[in-house]
Amino acid sequence: MTYFGNKDDERFWQVTNYERDCYIKSNGVQFCNRFPVVYDFGLKRDYEYVRVKKWKCRESEDVLKIARRSKEVILDESEFMSRSLNDFFNHWLENRIEELKFLSIRMFYYTENLVFRGIENRILDTTKEVNYKSYTGELYRLSPGKRLRRDDGVIASFYFDPNTKILNFGVVTDNNGNK
Image 1 (tube, rainbow, N blue to C red):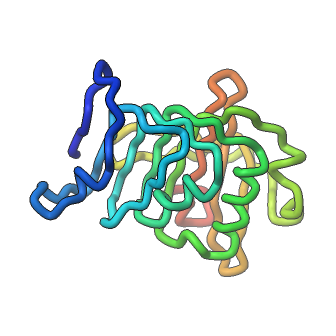
Image 2 (image 1 turned 45 degrees about the vertical axis):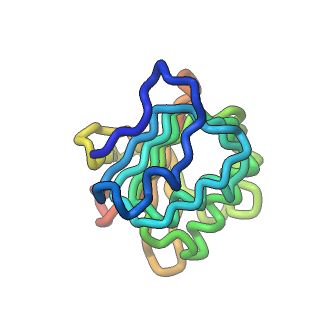
């Protein structure tokens, strides 16, 4: 794991500074500095794990840029809303973010009728206990919650905690809901 920035440093960080060839390649990266709200987070390398501590992203395309280059994405701050999450789910259902296995994002606003709009027939309730163990060893709760099923049979579980406003989304690898 490679860490960039620190929690006390208020300067903006440029991802391109990290991804230069002269830096050590890492399977996981955690950005601790803040990023501007409007920031092009176009990663050039593939990662197992990307965590961004201080970035208040708003648009689904912002999250998708990271999700296309990482298997696990954790965004500790965001201004992500229900419509953006619906767009993200649609991209996943259309196999457009194939490598992503897990997303944890703090939602700014979450309402199910907007999140589920147009995909209601692809969502099922689930009570099976499902957890996701991340690259760093942390366990994330995915149930009780909902399930999405793609046309190719791949299933993802997701759980929204209204107290923390965190949504966890994870691809399950067998019919019993295990990762």
